[in-house]
Length: 391
Image 1 (cartoon, rainbow, N blue to C red):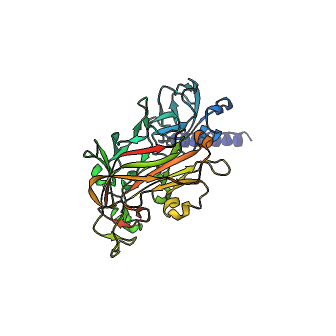
Image 2: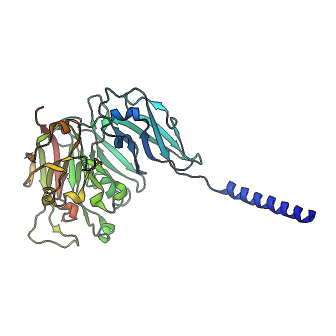
């Protein structure tokens, strides 16, 4: 019996040693991402439009900025507790749940991976859901480094009255970066900045080929676009779901004006890159004023597949007003455009409570979302002004 007991004890010790060895040899996690963030505490709910806006879930692994929308920065407390869900084993500094002052501008959080070898920074910002100004001159441009292909492209942003950055504009450039190949410069992308605008800089939108990969996927072209909203790069292979249109607005829009130049490409092609005889490419400028909550009170956005057929917008209960430039004749001279919003009336109090979004879209090919157009079509945009109803 004693001998059996000794044997059993030895086997248990050996098993424990093997198990311990396995645990020690297991590689530690290299990820350092924030997957969700939230303000905790019912006492803070009054500062948000609704409780849903107190949490940012499913944060993309490509994000560098986390933005919370609050009713007013002026009344926001100087200290708020912000909590994070991190990738397994990761840590964050400042500490998870610590009180921070977001009224003075963005707070930078640094996430460190479990193995301690990787770090990533996020800027967390609290902003009011309003457009920064009524005039967009597109002077604020950054060069974005897409390290995977060693390429760079342009991004546009605005500044509020306090000089704080507002990322209200986006384009499909981050998606194009996946197909254009290596060492590409900003002027190779569908959306870029140019110096010879109507005043100062301007936006250049051009329709390009997406190469062999794009043709294989039946997405042979990429139209240059710029829009109020966000491009969700993780949905790039379902591009009509990758474009999320609209940013909150607290006034009712009446008119959009601006300046453009346009030159269509030589050959209009269809989804199979076959020439469509007799058809000339057209540029497209339009805007949509829509309610940003559904009937159940959930956040609501318009996506590319909502806008590929304007007739469908008339039956969308969330859409209140639409504006569209009917024609954009080809011209090499800066030419003024104008479009007016038409549709049903919106409740002024709901608008004041920021329950509506404004989507403003510019595209070098009208049917670019359907991957039809002419390679080389080029639209320039500058000095865009949005007019609103008087209070």
